[in-house]
Image (cartoon, rainbow, N blue to C red):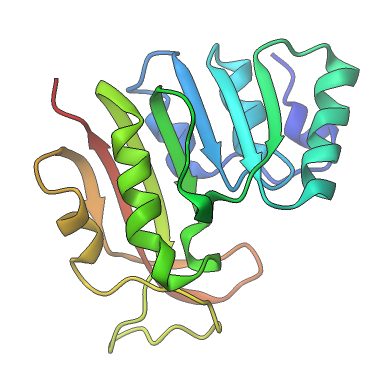
Length: 187
């Protein structure tokens, strides 16, 4: 299977999305804050039925162009502001990688709740988000960063398949701490 991301000059799929695909069977998936579609393309090539949303119409247009050129029938790009917290379908897998830190802090709880409500029983949420901690003060001026333990608390009652708050590096080289969660909704 050819890697569409490299063909179109996109970054590879996020490593946590790749790892999640080792566990999660193809299903209806939502890529929240998809940008130009690196994760959405990866998921669609692995058999997922993907809705990819982003607030940036230019990014969605670029992804739609790839979908059209490749004749991809399992990927639907849509302009959508995740801050609205009005997901309109049910999904087996919702991925939100390095997206939450770009939204208004006052909307994060509503967005997380909306994700949880629109995940089917037994479905998964994947979140990767920047943190601001004493050990790793966030060097970026994000509108939102997580506090230690905040993300795991938001998923109380879900099975935490994976959870850590490890240091990492953003694709442009900034070093900071990230909360990474892969959680399974109770059946």
